[in-house]
Length: 61
Image (cartoon, rainbow, N blue to C red; front, side, top):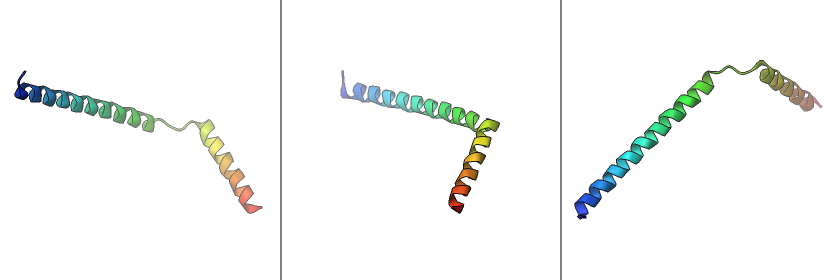
């Protein structure tokens, strides 16, 4: 195998790896955006509110 053929093969592998990384990046971005679009459950909001109230009470002591 010549040096040129080896370099072409390496370049092709690098391009494939770059494309695969871009696909992973795109899929992760889509997943993140879908999670971001979901609302926060009321139970969780209530819990956060109770924690804030408890923190305020402890600061007043």
